[in-house]
Image 1 (cartoon, rainbow, N blue to C red):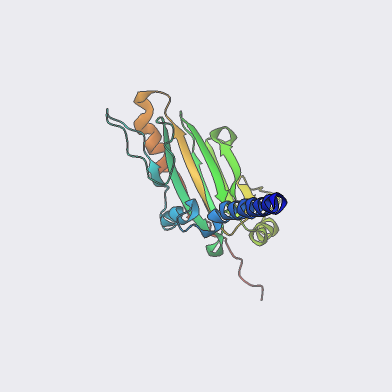
Image 2: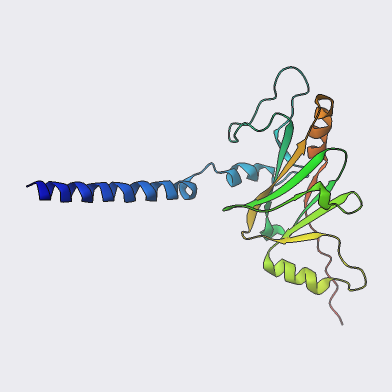
Length: 196
């Protein structure tokens, strides 16, 4: 009798463990309010949607409910993209504050860069599908190389998180402005007229 009980208990625990693991792994797939879904509200904007603005007064800035409380000295914004509309261009101008850009897909971050990678004070990221990347390479002018940082995205949809660090309280308004100064747009590819 005790052997049957031990066997039944072991089977029950194994089944419970499998159900638990399957449930935990299914949560991101079944979630309707994941980060990508919430960031999609910024798709039609030309600048990042403010997610967290650094408090410029004594009262703290309200944090969005869908993000963990960030560092109180970091302003955060989000630009969503759908590469079916065309490549996504994220343009930033560097300044005295540290600025970071991180590209995220459904499975997490796949590329990150800081303002240290800027060329002559400008940082231009172009996020593309593999086909768009191949087309851009084919259209490149060999005598004038592109200064864009081209990134092949693992997914068609995603978002870019923009962060600006205010090291001093006096830099807080500048951090909020730095996030809003980043431009997010669909990159217009110049198509050559067909040869006649």
